[in-house]
Image (cartoon, rainbow, N blue to C red; front, side, top):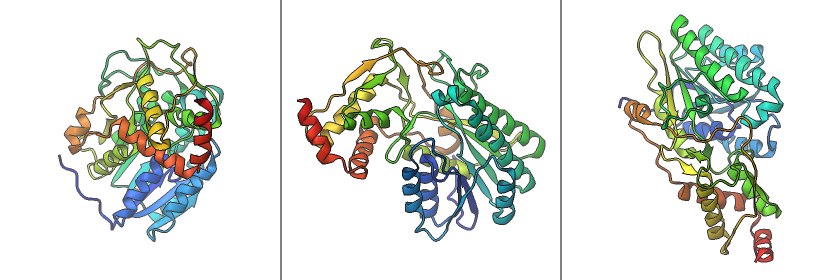
Amino acid sequence: MNYKQLDPSKTYLVTGAAGFIGYYLSKKLLEQRCRVIGVDNINDYYDVNLKYTRLDRLAPYENFTFVKGDISDKETITRLFEEYRPNYVINLAAQAGVRYSIENPDVYIQSNIIGFYNIIEACRNYPVDHLVYASSSSVYGANKKVPFEESDQVDNPVSLYASTKKSNELMAHTYSHLYKIPATGLRFFTVYGPMGRPDMAYFGFTDKFFAGESIKIFNNGDFENDLYRDFTYIDDIVEGIERLLTVPPTGEVKHKVYNIGNNNPEKLMVFIETLEKCLSNTLGQAVEFNKVFEPIKPGDVPATYASTDLLQEAVGFKPKTSIEEGLQRFVDWYVEYYEVEEKALEKVNSYS
């Protein structure tokens, strides 16, 4: 365990700073008086108001500089590195979503392949202490061996999104080998929490409930062989990144990949029942979703389950937030942010 405190005299470039993980990471760095340069193109993949709310909460920090720009624009990235000379780069900007990649492949190639290439090429031309970048648990594809370990074979992705993330890992390995760039890839496992992404299931289920609509569950209604997910709370993700930042890989090829997951997979139906309980707690009345069961979607995988041994070995950290605690925080935030409590109580009463 050799991680150190962050150095506030250094400059930290966070791409995707208006995104879910990018916002929380930027906030954590700023709270430690680090200088943060945040970059985001604020695309409309989901509600931009939420992105602007996140940025509004970062704006009061004197050490925060926001640049609206797209990582797929090489000129923009080169200019950023030239002007700010970041010591640490955390690349979280990406086109997210597995299902969306099936209908919209172009945007994934632009952001996740070309964008990542521009970042790592800039790290070559303007050397950095450490490049940390977002990979994904989706690289494991439909692997049946669990828990997923970083040494597992990951050559059979089942979505274009997963392919782009695997490509990032390959590019980072090559650049580390050729140009000695210290780079660490993080395979995130189903990140959730307050101010999260509205395209994620738990957020969508909550939206549907308050709109008085049914929720769709893509598991064929098969409770025995239900989908398993390693749901990881946002604070755990951020702490893992923070600790790894000061531990750049060493050795001949300065490239490592780590899982950041909860190491405690839950059945999707258990997660949904917990969300119902949390809503019941907040609203003071019993909540039950109206559920519609459908077949699993192309690109979805039956289970995600992270081994976090390598992460623990490297920085002495293992995610620990339970879904009960994490989902309660999400629900409390949601009700306050969207000011839905009164409407919700009417809705709950109409169901009973």
